[in-house]
Image (cartoon, rainbow, N blue to C red):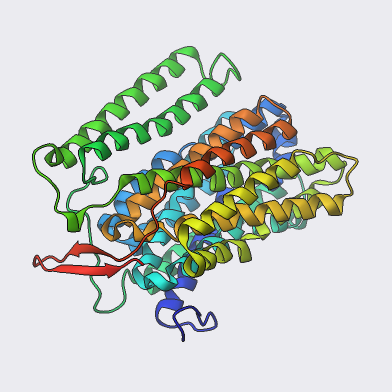
Amino acid sequence: MSEQKLNLFSFSGKIRTLHLTWFAFFITFMVWFNHAPLMASIKATFDLTTQQVKALLIINVALTIPARIVIGMLVDKYGPRIVFSALLFFSSLICFFFALADSYQMLLATRFALGFVGAGFVIGIRMIGEWFPAKQVGLAEGIYGGWGNFGSAASAMLLPSLALWFGGDNGWRWAIAATGALALVYAFIYYRLARNTPKGSTYFKPKKTGAMEVTSKGDFFFYLLMNVPMYAALAVLAWKLGPANLHIIGAGITDAIYIGLFALYLYQASHVWRINKHVFSEEVPEIHRYKFKQVAILDLAYFVTFGSELAVVSMLPLFFKNTFDISQVEAGLLASGFAFMNLVARPGGGFFSDRFGRKKSLTLLIAGLAVGYFVLGNITSGWPIALAVIATMACSFFVQAGEGAVFAIVPLVKRRMTGQVAGMAGAYGNVGAVTFLTVFSFVTPQFFFYTIAGAALVALIAVQFLDEPEGQTAEVLEDGTVQMIDVG
Protein backbone atom coordinates (compact mmCIF):
# COMPACT_ATOMS: atom_id res chain seq x y z
CA MET A 1 0.00 0.00 0.00
CA SER A 2 1.43 3.38 -0.96
CA GLU A 3 1.59 6.38 1.29
CA GLN A 4 -1.29 7.99 -0.59
CA LYS A 5 -3.60 5.01 -1.19
CA LEU A 6 -5.68 3.24 1.41
CA ASN A 7 -7.04 -0.27 0.89
CA LEU A 8 -10.54 0.40 2.12
CA PHE A 9 -11.59 -3.20 1.46
CA SER A 10 -9.28 -4.36 4.22
CA PHE A 11 -10.56 -4.94 7.73
CA SER A 12 -7.32 -5.20 9.64
CA GLY A 13 -4.94 -2.79 11.36
CA LYS A 14 -5.54 0.89 10.80
CA ILE A 15 -8.22 0.32 8.13
CA ARG A 16 -10.23 -1.74 10.61
CA THR A 17 -9.98 1.13 13.11
CA LEU A 18 -11.07 3.58 10.41
CA HIS A 19 -14.17 1.52 9.56
CA LEU A 20 -15.12 0.93 13.18
CA THR A 21 -14.78 4.61 13.98
CA TRP A 22 -16.50 6.20 10.99
CA PHE A 23 -19.50 3.96 11.59
CA ALA A 24 -19.64 5.02 15.25
CA PHE A 25 -19.67 8.62 14.06
CA PHE A 26 -22.29 7.74 11.41
CA ILE A 27 -24.63 6.49 14.15
CA THR A 28 -24.14 9.63 16.28
CA PHE A 29 -25.16 11.77 13.31
CA MET A 30 -28.21 9.62 12.63
CA VAL A 31 -29.30 10.13 16.23
CA TRP A 32 -28.41 13.83 16.25
CA PHE A 33 -30.50 14.66 13.18
CA ASN A 34 -33.20 11.99 13.34
CA HIS A 35 -35.81 14.69 14.03
CA ALA A 36 -35.17 16.91 10.98
CA PRO A 37 -36.78 14.75 8.24
CA LEU A 38 -39.69 13.92 10.57
CA MET A 39 -40.33 17.50 11.64
CA ALA A 40 -43.59 17.78 9.72
CA SER A 41 -44.99 14.78 11.63
CA ILE A 42 -43.67 16.08 14.96
CA LYS A 43 -45.17 19.49 14.20
CA ALA A 44 -48.55 17.91 13.49
CA THR A 45 -48.47 15.68 16.60
CA PHE A 46 -47.82 18.58 18.95
CA ASP A 47 -49.52 21.30 16.88
CA LEU A 48 -46.33 23.37 16.91
CA THR A 49 -45.94 26.87 15.53
CA THR A 50 -43.23 27.74 13.01
CA GLN A 51 -41.24 29.53 15.73
CA GLN A 52 -41.45 26.48 18.01
CA VAL A 53 -40.09 24.32 15.19
CA LYS A 54 -37.21 26.74 14.65
CA ALA A 55 -36.50 26.69 18.40
CA LEU A 56 -36.17 22.89 18.25
CA LEU A 57 -33.73 23.20 15.36
CA ILE A 58 -31.61 25.73 17.25
CA ILE A 59 -31.61 23.92 20.59
CA ASN A 60 -30.50 20.69 18.90
CA VAL A 61 -27.03 22.16 18.31
CA ALA A 62 -26.68 24.21 21.51
CA LEU A 63 -25.28 21.71 24.03
CA THR A 64 -22.78 20.44 21.47
CA ILE A 65 -20.79 23.67 21.94
CA PRO A 66 -19.61 22.92 25.51
CA ALA A 67 -19.90 19.16 24.92
CA ARG A 68 -17.17 19.19 22.27
CA ILE A 69 -14.83 21.04 24.62
CA VAL A 70 -15.53 18.58 27.43
CA ILE A 71 -15.31 15.52 25.18
CA GLY A 72 -12.03 16.82 23.72
CA MET A 73 -10.52 16.91 27.21
CA LEU A 74 -11.93 13.49 28.13
CA VAL A 75 -10.66 11.80 24.97
CA ASP A 76 -7.16 13.22 25.45
CA LYS A 77 -7.16 11.91 29.03
CA TYR A 78 -8.99 8.56 28.80
CA GLY A 79 -8.69 7.61 25.14
CA PRO A 80 -11.26 7.40 22.33
CA ARG A 81 -12.31 3.77 22.84
CA ILE A 82 -14.02 4.16 26.19
CA VAL A 83 -15.27 7.73 25.55
CA PHE A 84 -16.94 6.86 22.22
CA SER A 85 -18.57 3.75 23.71
CA ALA A 86 -19.93 5.71 26.67
CA LEU A 87 -21.25 8.50 24.43
CA LEU A 88 -23.16 6.04 22.23
CA PHE A 89 -24.62 4.30 25.27
CA PHE A 90 -25.94 7.38 27.06
CA SER A 91 -27.15 9.15 23.90
CA SER A 92 -29.24 6.08 23.02
CA LEU A 93 -31.13 6.43 26.29
CA ILE A 94 -31.85 10.13 25.66
CA CYS A 95 -33.02 9.23 22.15
CA PHE A 96 -35.61 6.88 23.63
CA PHE A 97 -36.91 9.66 25.88
CA PHE A 98 -37.28 11.97 22.88
CA ALA A 99 -39.30 9.31 21.07
CA LEU A 100 -41.57 9.04 24.14
CA ALA A 101 -42.04 12.82 24.60
CA ASP A 102 -45.60 13.83 25.44
CA SER A 103 -45.17 17.62 25.53
CA TYR A 104 -43.27 20.37 23.77
CA GLN A 105 -41.28 20.97 26.95
CA MET A 106 -40.10 17.36 26.92
CA LEU A 107 -39.23 17.65 23.24
CA LEU A 108 -37.08 20.69 24.02
CA ALA A 109 -35.38 19.11 27.03
CA THR A 110 -34.50 15.84 25.31
CA ARG A 111 -33.48 17.56 22.07
CA PHE A 112 -31.22 19.85 24.09
CA ALA A 113 -29.66 16.83 25.81
CA LEU A 114 -29.20 15.05 22.48
CA GLY A 115 -26.93 17.89 21.42
CA PHE A 116 -24.26 16.06 23.44
CA VAL A 117 -24.15 13.24 20.88
CA GLY A 118 -22.82 15.75 18.33
CA ALA A 119 -19.54 15.75 20.24
CA GLY A 120 -18.82 12.25 18.95
CA PHE A 121 -16.98 13.70 15.97
CA VAL A 122 -14.15 14.95 18.18
CA ILE A 123 -13.42 11.46 19.51
CA GLY A 124 -12.73 9.93 16.12
CA ILE A 125 -10.43 12.77 15.08
CA ARG A 126 -8.03 11.76 17.86
CA MET A 127 -8.46 8.04 17.11
CA ILE A 128 -7.69 8.41 13.39
CA GLY A 129 -4.80 10.78 14.16
CA GLU A 130 -3.24 8.06 16.31
CA TRP A 131 -3.46 5.36 13.63
CA PHE A 132 -2.47 7.22 10.43
CA PRO A 133 0.78 9.06 9.48
CA ALA A 134 0.87 12.70 8.37
CA LYS A 135 0.92 11.82 4.65
CA GLN A 136 -2.33 9.86 4.98
CA VAL A 137 -4.07 11.58 7.85
CA GLY A 138 -5.95 14.12 5.73
CA LEU A 139 -7.54 11.46 3.53
CA ALA A 140 -8.22 9.17 6.51
CA GLU A 141 -9.81 11.98 8.54
CA GLY A 142 -11.82 12.95 5.45
CA ILE A 143 -13.16 9.41 5.06
CA TYR A 144 -13.96 9.28 8.77
CA GLY A 145 -15.73 12.64 8.76
CA GLY A 146 -17.39 12.30 5.36
CA TRP A 147 -18.74 8.80 5.72
CA GLY A 148 -19.75 9.50 9.31
CA ASN A 149 -21.46 12.78 8.41
CA PHE A 150 -23.53 10.79 5.94
CA GLY A 151 -25.55 9.71 8.96
CA SER A 152 -27.64 12.86 8.61
CA ALA A 153 -28.36 12.01 4.97
CA ALA A 154 -29.24 8.46 5.97
CA SER A 155 -31.75 9.85 8.44
CA ALA A 156 -33.24 12.13 5.78
CA MET A 157 -33.55 9.28 3.28
CA LEU A 158 -34.60 6.41 5.52
CA LEU A 159 -36.54 7.69 8.52
CA PRO A 160 -39.61 9.14 6.71
CA SER A 161 -40.09 5.83 4.90
CA LEU A 162 -39.42 3.88 8.10
CA ALA A 163 -42.05 5.97 9.89
CA LEU A 164 -44.54 5.16 7.13
CA TRP A 165 -43.66 1.46 7.41
CA PHE A 166 -44.37 1.52 11.15
CA GLY A 167 -47.53 3.45 10.31
CA GLY A 168 -49.99 5.39 12.43
CA ASP A 169 -49.60 8.65 14.29
CA ASN A 170 -46.65 7.22 16.24
CA GLY A 171 -44.65 6.04 13.24
CA TRP A 172 -42.16 8.86 13.71
CA ARG A 173 -41.60 7.79 17.33
CA TRP A 174 -40.71 4.23 16.32
CA ALA A 175 -38.36 5.49 13.60
CA ILE A 176 -36.49 7.69 16.07
CA ALA A 177 -36.36 4.91 18.68
CA ALA A 178 -34.81 2.61 16.06
CA THR A 179 -31.79 4.93 15.78
CA GLY A 180 -31.43 4.85 19.57
CA ALA A 181 -31.46 1.05 19.55
CA LEU A 182 -28.71 1.02 16.90
CA ALA A 183 -26.56 3.34 19.04
CA LEU A 184 -27.07 1.15 22.11
CA VAL A 185 -25.95 -2.04 20.36
CA TYR A 186 -22.94 -0.42 18.69
CA ALA A 187 -21.70 1.03 21.98
CA PHE A 188 -20.81 -2.50 23.09
CA ILE A 189 -19.41 -3.48 19.69
CA TYR A 190 -17.06 -0.48 19.60
CA TYR A 191 -15.82 -1.09 23.14
CA ARG A 192 -15.11 -4.71 22.29
CA LEU A 193 -13.26 -4.18 18.99
CA ALA A 194 -11.59 -0.73 19.02
CA ARG A 195 -8.12 0.11 20.38
CA ASN A 196 -6.68 3.57 21.10
CA THR A 197 -3.33 3.12 19.31
CA PRO A 198 -1.47 0.62 17.13
CA LYS A 199 0.37 -2.04 19.13
CA GLY A 200 3.58 -0.60 20.60
CA SER A 201 2.59 3.07 20.10
CA THR A 202 2.38 5.61 22.91
CA TYR A 203 -0.85 7.47 23.65
CA PHE A 204 0.35 10.95 24.55
CA LYS A 205 -1.73 12.78 27.16
CA PRO A 206 -1.73 16.47 28.11
CA LYS A 207 0.52 17.38 31.02
CA LYS A 208 -2.43 19.09 32.71
CA THR A 209 -6.18 18.94 32.19
CA GLY A 210 -8.90 21.58 32.45
CA ALA A 211 -7.89 23.85 29.56
CA MET A 212 -5.70 23.91 26.47
CA GLU A 213 -1.99 24.54 26.88
CA VAL A 214 -0.55 27.62 25.15
CA THR A 215 3.10 28.52 24.71
CA SER A 216 3.32 32.34 24.80
CA LYS A 217 1.84 35.35 26.63
CA GLY A 218 0.08 36.60 23.49
CA ASP A 219 -1.49 33.20 22.88
CA PHE A 220 -2.77 33.17 26.47
CA PHE A 221 -4.92 36.26 25.85
CA PHE A 222 -5.83 35.09 22.34
CA TYR A 223 -7.13 31.83 23.84
CA LEU A 224 -9.30 33.72 26.35
CA LEU A 225 -10.71 35.86 23.53
CA MET A 226 -11.52 32.86 21.34
CA ASN A 227 -13.54 31.32 24.18
CA VAL A 228 -15.97 34.26 24.26
CA PRO A 229 -18.04 33.38 21.13
CA MET A 230 -18.85 29.94 22.52
CA TYR A 231 -20.51 31.46 25.58
CA ALA A 232 -22.04 34.24 23.50
CA ALA A 233 -23.73 31.67 21.25
CA LEU A 234 -25.34 30.02 24.26
CA ALA A 235 -26.46 33.43 25.52
CA VAL A 236 -28.05 34.14 22.13
CA LEU A 237 -29.90 30.83 22.39
CA ALA A 238 -31.23 31.76 25.84
CA TRP A 239 -32.32 35.16 24.48
CA LYS A 240 -34.04 33.47 21.55
CA LEU A 241 -35.98 31.14 23.84
CA GLY A 242 -36.69 33.83 26.42
CA PRO A 243 -39.50 36.37 26.89
CA ALA A 244 -38.10 38.72 24.24
CA ASN A 245 -38.82 36.14 21.51
CA LEU A 246 -40.39 32.69 21.85
CA HIS A 247 -41.52 32.91 25.52
CA ILE A 248 -40.44 29.31 26.08
CA ILE A 249 -38.45 30.16 29.21
CA GLY A 250 -39.22 32.93 31.66
CA ALA A 251 -37.31 36.12 32.39
CA GLY A 252 -35.92 34.77 35.67
CA ILE A 253 -34.54 31.62 34.05
CA THR A 254 -33.12 33.63 31.16
CA ASP A 255 -31.29 35.98 33.52
CA ALA A 256 -30.03 33.01 35.54
CA ILE A 257 -28.62 31.48 32.35
CA TYR A 258 -26.81 34.73 31.51
CA ILE A 259 -25.28 34.87 34.99
CA GLY A 260 -24.38 31.20 34.87
CA LEU A 261 -22.65 31.55 31.51
CA PHE A 262 -20.62 34.50 32.77
CA ALA A 263 -19.63 32.54 35.87
CA LEU A 264 -18.65 29.55 33.74
CA TYR A 265 -16.47 31.75 31.56
CA LEU A 266 -14.68 33.10 34.63
CA TYR A 267 -14.30 29.55 35.95
CA GLN A 268 -12.78 28.40 32.66
CA ALA A 269 -10.52 31.45 32.59
CA SER A 270 -9.21 30.43 36.03
CA HIS A 271 -8.33 27.01 34.62
CA VAL A 272 -6.61 28.63 31.64
CA TRP A 273 -4.53 30.67 34.10
CA ARG A 274 -3.77 27.65 36.32
CA ILE A 275 -2.48 25.60 33.42
CA ASN A 276 -0.65 28.36 31.53
CA LYS A 277 0.58 30.86 34.15
CA HIS A 278 4.12 29.59 33.68
CA VAL A 279 4.35 31.39 30.31
CA PHE A 280 4.51 34.71 32.22
CA SER A 281 7.52 33.65 34.30
CA GLU A 282 9.50 31.37 31.99
CA GLU A 283 9.93 30.91 28.26
CA VAL A 284 8.67 27.71 26.68
CA PRO A 285 11.50 25.91 24.83
CA GLU A 286 11.27 26.37 21.07
CA ILE A 287 10.91 22.64 20.45
CA HIS A 288 7.65 22.52 22.41
CA ARG A 289 6.02 25.68 21.04
CA TYR A 290 3.07 25.94 18.68
CA LYS A 291 1.11 28.93 17.38
CA PHE A 292 -2.41 29.27 18.80
CA LYS A 293 -3.36 31.30 15.73
CA GLN A 294 -3.43 27.98 13.87
CA VAL A 295 -6.23 26.82 16.19
CA ALA A 296 -8.10 30.13 15.90
CA ILE A 297 -8.05 30.12 12.08
CA LEU A 298 -9.25 26.51 11.97
CA ASP A 299 -12.04 27.51 14.37
CA LEU A 300 -13.24 30.23 11.99
CA ALA A 301 -12.97 27.95 8.97
CA TYR A 302 -15.06 25.31 10.70
CA PHE A 303 -17.53 27.99 11.81
CA VAL A 304 -18.53 28.56 8.17
CA THR A 305 -18.08 24.99 6.87
CA PHE A 306 -19.57 22.66 9.45
CA GLY A 307 -21.63 25.44 11.05
CA SER A 308 -23.38 26.10 7.78
CA GLU A 309 -23.84 22.38 7.10
CA LEU A 310 -25.59 21.85 10.44
CA ALA A 311 -27.84 24.83 9.84
CA VAL A 312 -28.69 23.90 6.25
CA VAL A 313 -29.28 20.20 7.02
CA SER A 314 -31.73 21.30 9.73
CA MET A 315 -33.78 23.63 7.51
CA LEU A 316 -33.41 22.15 4.02
CA PRO A 317 -36.21 19.51 4.10
CA LEU A 318 -38.80 22.15 5.04
CA PHE A 319 -37.24 24.61 2.55
CA PHE A 320 -37.72 22.16 -0.33
CA LYS A 321 -41.19 21.19 0.88
CA ASN A 322 -42.38 24.80 1.08
CA THR A 323 -40.58 26.08 -2.03
CA PHE A 324 -41.68 23.33 -4.41
CA ASP A 325 -44.89 22.17 -2.65
CA ILE A 326 -43.87 18.49 -2.44
CA SER A 327 -44.42 15.73 0.14
CA GLN A 328 -42.36 15.24 3.30
CA VAL A 329 -40.79 12.05 1.94
CA GLU A 330 -39.84 13.73 -1.36
CA ALA A 331 -38.44 16.77 0.46
CA GLY A 332 -36.36 14.55 2.74
CA LEU A 333 -34.91 12.68 -0.21
CA LEU A 334 -34.08 15.87 -2.11
CA ALA A 335 -32.58 17.56 0.95
CA SER A 336 -30.43 14.50 1.65
CA GLY A 337 -28.39 15.49 -1.42
CA PHE A 338 -26.67 18.16 0.67
CA ALA A 339 -25.34 15.63 3.18
CA PHE A 340 -24.99 12.89 0.53
CA MET A 341 -21.90 14.64 -0.85
CA ASN A 342 -20.09 13.81 2.41
CA LEU A 343 -19.30 10.39 0.98
CA VAL A 344 -16.85 11.85 -1.52
CA ALA A 345 -16.43 15.55 -0.71
CA ARG A 346 -14.93 15.36 2.76
CA PRO A 347 -12.43 12.62 1.83
CA GLY A 348 -11.71 14.68 -1.28
CA GLY A 349 -10.92 17.73 0.82
CA GLY A 350 -8.56 15.68 2.96
CA PHE A 351 -6.91 14.19 -0.13
CA PHE A 352 -6.42 17.61 -1.75
CA SER A 353 -4.91 18.85 1.51
CA ASP A 354 -2.47 15.93 1.70
CA ARG A 355 -1.49 16.20 -1.96
CA PHE A 356 -1.57 19.91 -2.87
CA GLY A 357 -0.99 21.72 0.42
CA ARG A 358 -3.12 22.50 3.48
CA LYS A 359 -3.45 26.27 3.11
CA LYS A 360 -3.98 26.33 -0.65
CA SER A 361 -6.69 23.66 -0.50
CA LEU A 362 -8.57 25.36 2.33
CA THR A 363 -8.45 28.70 0.50
CA LEU A 364 -9.93 27.34 -2.72
CA LEU A 365 -12.63 25.34 -0.97
CA ILE A 366 -13.90 28.19 1.20
CA ALA A 367 -13.97 30.47 -1.85
CA GLY A 368 -16.12 27.88 -3.64
CA LEU A 369 -18.36 27.63 -0.57
CA ALA A 370 -19.04 31.36 -0.65
CA VAL A 371 -20.05 31.21 -4.32
CA GLY A 372 -22.20 28.14 -3.69
CA TYR A 373 -24.28 29.76 -0.96
CA PHE A 374 -24.77 32.85 -3.09
CA VAL A 375 -26.27 30.60 -5.78
CA LEU A 376 -28.56 28.87 -3.25
CA GLY A 377 -29.82 32.28 -2.20
CA ASN A 378 -31.27 32.67 -5.69
CA ILE A 379 -33.37 29.47 -5.71
CA THR A 380 -37.11 30.10 -6.14
CA SER A 381 -40.18 28.02 -6.95
CA GLY A 382 -39.60 28.94 -10.60
CA TRP A 383 -36.41 26.83 -10.71
CA PRO A 384 -36.61 23.26 -12.03
CA ILE A 385 -36.29 20.97 -9.00
CA ALA A 386 -33.43 19.08 -10.66
CA LEU A 387 -31.42 22.29 -11.06
CA ALA A 388 -32.04 23.23 -7.40
CA VAL A 389 -30.78 19.82 -6.28
CA ILE A 390 -27.68 20.11 -8.49
CA ALA A 391 -26.92 23.57 -7.06
CA THR A 392 -27.39 22.22 -3.55
CA MET A 393 -25.03 19.30 -4.10
CA ALA A 394 -22.41 21.49 -5.80
CA CYS A 395 -22.45 23.88 -2.86
CA SER A 396 -22.29 21.00 -0.39
CA PHE A 397 -19.18 19.64 -2.13
CA PHE A 398 -17.22 22.77 -1.22
CA VAL A 399 -18.74 22.86 2.28
CA GLN A 400 -17.78 19.31 3.15
CA ALA A 401 -14.47 19.29 1.29
CA GLY A 402 -13.65 22.40 3.33
CA GLU A 403 -14.43 20.46 6.51
CA GLY A 404 -12.09 17.72 5.35
CA ALA A 405 -9.35 20.29 4.70
CA VAL A 406 -9.78 21.77 8.21
CA PHE A 407 -9.39 18.42 9.92
CA ALA A 408 -6.49 17.44 7.71
CA ILE A 409 -4.64 20.14 9.69
CA VAL A 410 -6.05 19.61 13.21
CA PRO A 411 -3.99 16.47 14.07
CA LEU A 412 -0.83 18.29 12.94
CA VAL A 413 -1.06 21.18 15.43
CA LYS A 414 0.01 19.35 18.61
CA ARG A 415 -0.45 15.57 18.96
CA ARG A 416 -1.14 15.35 22.71
CA MET A 417 -3.82 18.05 22.43
CA THR A 418 -5.51 16.80 19.26
CA GLY A 419 -8.73 16.09 21.13
CA GLN A 420 -8.84 19.59 22.57
CA VAL A 421 -7.96 21.28 19.27
CA ALA A 422 -10.62 19.19 17.53
CA GLY A 423 -13.04 19.96 20.35
CA MET A 424 -12.59 23.70 20.05
CA ALA A 425 -12.83 23.68 16.25
CA GLY A 426 -15.87 21.43 16.49
CA ALA A 427 -17.45 23.73 19.06
CA TYR A 428 -16.99 26.64 16.67
CA GLY A 429 -18.85 24.61 14.07
CA ASN A 430 -21.78 24.55 16.47
CA VAL A 431 -21.37 28.24 17.24
CA GLY A 432 -21.76 28.76 13.51
CA ALA A 433 -24.87 26.56 13.47
CA VAL A 434 -26.49 28.47 16.34
CA THR A 435 -25.56 31.77 14.71
CA PHE A 436 -26.91 30.85 11.29
CA LEU A 437 -30.07 29.19 12.62
CA THR A 438 -30.75 32.24 14.78
CA VAL A 439 -30.41 34.42 11.68
CA PHE A 440 -32.71 31.99 9.85
CA SER A 441 -35.40 32.43 12.51
CA PHE A 442 -35.64 36.14 11.61
CA VAL A 443 -35.10 36.24 7.86
CA THR A 444 -36.09 34.57 4.60
CA PRO A 445 -34.21 31.45 3.43
CA GLN A 446 -32.65 33.54 0.65
CA PHE A 447 -31.12 36.06 3.06
CA PHE A 448 -30.05 33.15 5.28
CA PHE A 449 -27.94 31.75 2.43
CA TYR A 450 -26.49 35.19 1.67
CA THR A 451 -25.47 35.57 5.33
CA ILE A 452 -23.46 32.35 5.19
CA ALA A 453 -21.77 33.49 1.98
CA GLY A 454 -20.71 36.74 3.67
CA ALA A 455 -19.33 34.87 6.71
CA ALA A 456 -17.35 32.63 4.34
CA LEU A 457 -15.59 35.67 2.86
CA VAL A 458 -14.44 36.68 6.37
CA ALA A 459 -13.08 33.17 6.99
CA LEU A 460 -11.38 33.25 3.59
CA ILE A 461 -9.38 36.31 4.67
CA ALA A 462 -8.43 34.64 7.96
CA VAL A 463 -7.13 31.52 6.20
CA GLN A 464 -4.52 33.64 4.41
CA PHE A 465 -2.74 33.99 7.79
CA LEU A 466 -2.52 30.21 8.30
CA ASP A 467 0.97 28.67 8.42
CA GLU A 468 1.48 25.55 6.33
CA PRO A 469 2.36 22.61 8.68
CA GLU A 470 5.92 21.48 8.03
CA GLY A 471 8.81 19.67 9.65
CA GLN A 472 8.24 17.91 12.97
CA THR A 473 6.56 18.50 16.31
CA ALA A 474 7.88 17.24 19.64
CA GLU A 475 6.14 15.13 22.29
CA VAL A 476 7.64 13.87 25.56
CA LEU A 477 7.41 10.22 26.62
CA GLU A 478 6.75 9.29 30.26
CA ASP A 479 10.45 8.63 30.85
CA GLY A 480 11.32 12.14 29.63
CA THR A 481 12.51 11.09 26.18
CA VAL A 482 11.55 13.49 23.38
CA GLN A 483 9.86 11.91 20.37
CA MET A 484 9.65 13.81 17.08
CA ILE A 485 6.49 13.39 14.96
CA ASP A 486 6.37 14.30 11.27
CA VAL A 487 3.72 16.90 10.36
CA GLY A 488 5.00 17.97 6.93
